[in-house]
Every structure is written in C-alpha cells, then in structure tokens.
Image (cartoon, rainbow, N blue to C red):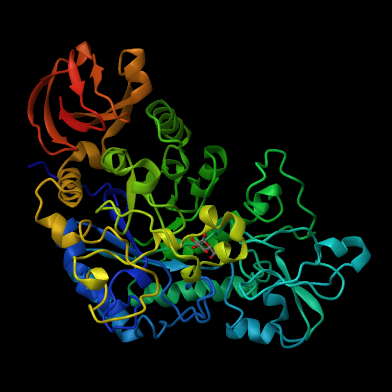
Length: 564
Ligand code: GLC
C-alpha cells in the first residue's frame, strides 16, 4: 500500500469532515432529541466503520432553540438537552483517542435574544452593552408605513413606533428589524427576531468573540465552522439595499441585492483577527460558511501574507444543476480561480439544503459521492448521506423550522426540517435513533428506515453504505486522490461530453482516471490516448480488472475509478 502520510499536508487538507446535526444523531436519554453521550456511542461507527477524520458538530450551546441552536444564549457552555461540559470533554477526548478531530460551530454574527449581552443591551439606551448590538431609531411612519410589518411568534421582525430604519430583510422572511417597546428603538436581526446581530464595529465585541474561540481552543477543539461569516459587518450608513434585478419572485429575501449587509470588505479585517487566534495554537483551522461565486469566494482565503479562512466552504456542488457538462465546467472554473496557496474543498449536503439523494436521485447519489471523494480538496459529508438518506415530508403540524413557518407559501422550498430527520441506524421502532418506547421524536423518522439504515446496509455487500466505505477507504490509501493534481479530460463524442465527466488525478507515478456517467443510459467513452486501465472501484461494486479505454462502456448511472 502506498504511503499516505505526508508532512506537507494538514489534517484538514487530507482528511474527510463529517457533519453531525446533534439533535438528530443519537438520543441516549429518551427525550426524543440527540445528545453528546449519544454521539460518543457512535464514535466507533465514525472512525472504524466509516473511516472519517474529523467531525463538525452543529451548535450544542445553551439556546432557546428558535433557530435550533443557531441562537446562542451562552457561547461557553453546553445545552442541557445535549449534556454537560464534562460530556463534551469526554467526547473530545474519545474523538482524539480514535485519531479524529472535533470541530465546533461558531456562530459569531448573532446571539440569542436571551444571551446576557442582549438582555443588558436592551435594558436601557445607556447600558454599557447597548452598543454591542445594532440599534437604530425608527423612521417617521408616513415614509415607510407600508414596511412596518407586524411580527409573529415564529420570529418575523416586529414593527412599532414609526417604521424600520431601512429596507433590510431577514433571511427567514419579514423585515430585519424589530422594535423594542422598552427602549423605543429597533434592533437588527438578519435571521429570526430572537437572533439579534452583534455589532462588530465595537472592539469589545470582537474581543469577546475571540475569547470564545480561545475558550474552546484551550479545551482542545481542533477548529470551527464559522456560521454566516460574511454577514458580520454591515454598512455603517445603513443605506437601503437596491432591488435585485434578477429576482425570480420566489423568496422575498432575494428581492434585494445585499450589498450593505453581506461580504463588506471590512469583514476581512475581522477574519484576520480570528485567524491570528487560531494560528497562536497548533494546527487548528476554520471553515467559513460562504455561499458565493468564485470571484467573491476566493477573497475569503485572504492573501499569502494575510491568510483568512483555511477553507471557505465551496457549495457549488449543492447549488449546481446536476448535469455532466455543467459540473465539469464548474469544477474546472473553481480549480482555475483558486489562489495558488488556496486549498480546495467540496460539499454535497448540509443541514440547510435538501438531501443529496432527493436532489439528484438515489442512483446518481453514488456518482455524486464518487465525485466528492475523488475531486482535489477536502470533502465535507452530511450525516446520513452515506446511507442515501432522503428528504422526509414533514406533516404541517410537525414543521419546526422558522423560515418554513414564516413563509408557508414557500415552505416546501425554504423549510429545512426534511433534511434534519433522525439518523437511521436500524429497523427497530425509532430506527435506533432513540429507544423503541420513546414517543415524540423532535422530527419524524423517514418512512424508508426499515430498508435504509446502517445495520441493514452493513449486511448487504453492495449497499450504499458499503460502497461509501470502500470509496472512502480507497481515497485514504491513494496519494493521487489525497494530494495529486487534477485535470479534466475531454470524454470524446458529443454524447459523452454531454453525459460524462472524466478527469485525471496524479501524484508521482500514480495516475487515476475518474469516469462518471451522469445519465440513466449507457455511455461509450473513447479515450484511445490512455490505452488500457484497471478498474479500482465502481459505483455498483460489481466490476474490476483491465479495460480498454479506447472503447469503454460506462453503464447507466455508473462511475468508475480506473488506475492508468
Ligand atoms: C447558517 C446556518 C443556518 C442558520 C443560519 C443562522 O446559515 O447554517 O442553519 O439558520 O446560519 O444562524
């Protein structure tokens, strides 16, 4: 076997990251919500069965859960639903003992309205923490009376005296401002009204969040996924945002061009300060949540003398239309746009996006995972995608997610409950997520759990899970995939160009071809220049051996890794 340790690369470059949504992974105490002791029980699955290198946990901090933990009421403790700091320390220790890394979700843009900082801030206009959040006077009502929306329980902004200070919108529907009766001003919230935005123009706030990072880094955490990193700075003049000329009329939030609330140049100075904290420790990292086109995305790497995010998330595989020619171009464009010292990364799913197997279909989900795990750069996997878990239709009375509750007419588009349902471990009632007698899981189990579950798939040699395990094991043992070069290859005929994506990875004398058929029909590849090759892995796990690349038949929905 080749040597796959390489001192020139960090763990976050050669490793694979696995995202756990803690509420849905493993419920150890029968309350219908997953927890940290539950995750500890699953560590052997993560390290041995799957072979993951790092775990990222969505937020586990105390929170009133208006946005399921992304509304943090205390940055340096654990929500009792999930356990205690002692449970956390045990999780960290046991993760490290298995040679894996543990990353936390850092949510710096906003706190909960129940965070003591905000409670103080809203207590009076002259409280020392008033300026820790973003408070503005309302405008005289005749000017904007029509914008003075009334709020509701699900967290839409609430109008009051006058009208909101400007036209900024919440990502989750309604205005981004809520009127505070007590102090007669509006505060800014880019998400639900219970998530007030912090004011990073105040250096005390910057220092406070850097201290939060140090708190967890001192405990031994290996890195952070930084929530909405590009939103942390807002226009100091609070100008109205212009209309978005390309708006498709679907999500009200998209009706404006967010030039004054997102990706302001000043945010990079803030990220540099966060990076400096990480760099004062040993081999820690941050991955920023950034949904951006290449030109803007690459700015989040910083420059060689001013490094910012180790990885700015690249979500293009999530957003892409699933066709070979488009994905081929998208990968080539991303590779070409990367700064010379920027390390690539790829993602197929997360807790905010419809499940991969639902988006592309279960047959293509195998092809998509082959792509994820053979492209150059760090892959991030979403829990359950290794089984082909699908979106779950949530009955209206069970919907939890604020954007869906706030915008019922587009709930099917914006609701995120369907991709957050409990992990499917086995075919017992509650799918092994919780003990069989537990009632009232926080979200329902998928109807397909009797077939699609870990135990069942481990028993079936060609299951999705066993395919995923083989693919990951192959990646881990293969330098060309870990750090080799990437170049795409013209797949030949027009049909093949339309339906197949072919690329080569190479490290030293190891050369691999990855051939992916995005279509439900057989495709003929003609690559005479490449001679013969040997199939190392196929998505169906049913073929191996030598093939003639001048005349190679790729079956419907098939992908192969071929040694050259
Ligand atoms: C990020 C999170 C999302 C959350 C939002 C507000 O986009 O991924 O789940 O609702 O930020 O914190």
